[in-house]
Length: 285
Image 1 (cartoon, rainbow, N blue to C red):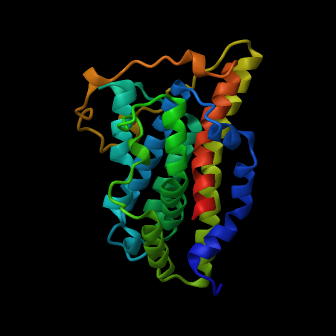
Image 2 (cartoon, rainbow, N blue to C red; image 1 turned 60 degrees about the vertical axis):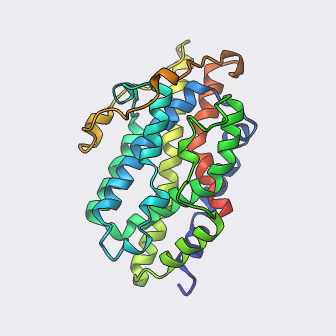
């Protein structure tokens, strides 16, 4: 493996990237066919994912297998997602957001890797952060227009990287740091496999919810994901109360006229957002 790790990782995830890229979910989201309610639920899943990822990053920030790519001010998304969830759900958002089983599985994998195989953590960080930094900017504009969100950015903090003034230069820096990580041939192969797993976990979050909705359609009614795991249970560190915010400024949004005709179609379009973010992002890396 004489190639740089970043190049190898892009090659290793090419097939699964194409799987996401060629699905109707990605294409439809780019057409702006997404409803506010489903966008909120996907944002909630992202919160659980990033909370777990960043907890493990903090655990390993001084570990040489991760330290060179530790960029909390530039990349970390937990605080931004908290801001978005407070905007969408209000001050009690921690009590309201659901964590479906597939999201829980993703979270468990992140914790397992961080605690037991921290050398693999870079695969998850690279897949998510550089994907969001690249493709997320395209999706930000689409979501803002489709959901008629404020031009001032409320509800879209997740897509805003205030600590990155030049995305292209920062991605170059990140890749150079990642390529400089010391790892033997066997470890590098495991990192590449973990990158593919990270991509698949993102897609599985959406597929599991799609299956849930499909079953509900067979029974003649739409299905909402069960709140199997609440924020206060999944990460012990979240005991500081809700984010002080602008509940009085929050606008109730019921864009029923923007939704596709059936609950199943609406769920498919919105939940494809997770796969779309990574797919668009990796394509632009």
